[in-house]
Length: 612
Ligand SMILES: [Fe+2]
Image (cartoon, rainbow, N blue to C red):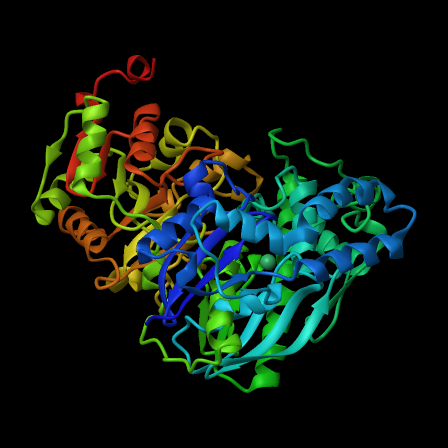
């Protein structure tokens, strides 16, 4: 009989569930995709239900349920932190404690009760691997490497904020650990907060803002130096010491001491949603530079400690794809594999892996290339019946294309004509990025595409260009990058031959003037510093999506498309056909392709009346 491990992450942000059957990933999903609440932190009842249904089992069949951290140790960290900073910590102590006392300390009972609401019976064991071990397991075990260095960097788990480890066979050894409050993730989050973005989600925006910083300016240089002189002691081995006079996250309910930061940097905290002035772009660049330096030094230490050629990474900071692209390019590691669900949602998968390999001591089968993640397509999929049922409910006309080539030909024709296409196929992605199964697509050559997608589809005046999905075979034609980047976790420069010249004094132009200047033959996916966030598409991993790209290449000569996640601002990525149809109808997406079905906006009945 199969041995099955359920991994769970919950109660902080991005709850998720993952299921391993005899050591192989069967299914994994974020709770937010079902509840439609972005970053949903509640117990992942729906995600657990989904993964159990995929296996056709109940709780009795589980060998273990593994939760992604140790709540008691986390509680101990909170208590000690409050003690160390008393009395200034009292305010947040009282704000946090009732929740901890009522819910989190009774975690075992809480988890058992919540699981009981999903299915009858109970798992044989309930395990609590450490938070960073869960991240490390999610990085190493599904990677293609027999042995590897493992680096995990995030905000904080129990105590650890960064670890360096070594993985071989079915074991992981943690070699170095950096503890709270000294955290690269929290440093980055503090700047995210100061620049007016949301912590735990807005970090990506800060990274996208950094290329607008003027690298050669005195302000950026002096800001970088101020960070290193006053905020962070960055040591040669990559470890850091934060000067806690400048940070409030240990004692207060905010990230940084706003007055001290204003005095130091000479700018006030930016109000969320306000116009973004140049100093915030420069701050973003300066902290990005410091973060990269810390990551490079940690990687160098990991290389020295392990002597491995392979590096695997996870933790929220491993989503910093600008740093990742540079790290791979400059070495010392020859190979870099990053868990696509590098944030806390991926902890669910890591916890399940830890239960399988470390707790149960099962040997590891080395996954073949590219890895054991099945392209990260691990979530729910829907049948033709589901889509036809949806079409009946909304009286939505469609055309069915049972011939995949014909469908790709029609879709590519629309894309080449400047239309925006919602593309929904197969299993939903695990991790924060849409990788062609729940994506909104457009023509990267189109000079208006970036603006149209932002304003008319995503309903935001975004300052970031979109990411390209590019046929793996065509990657080097457009980008100075030679390895596949299947999870959109690497940023690389657009090739010189594809670029167009910049006007004089480009750096002095306003943010949107710079953004809308046509910088390359593929302007919709070229950032202001000529960088691009790469998603390379492999013919075997995702044949249907690859075929669409190939059809677009045949029509236009360009084997790439704009790929942005299928959602609107503030909402999770669509999961079901219903989510997709509603998003399609509420935005200016011109056509929706769901599996074999094509819905044209011009054919659809009015949506308001349907809703009413
Ligand atoms: Fe984490």
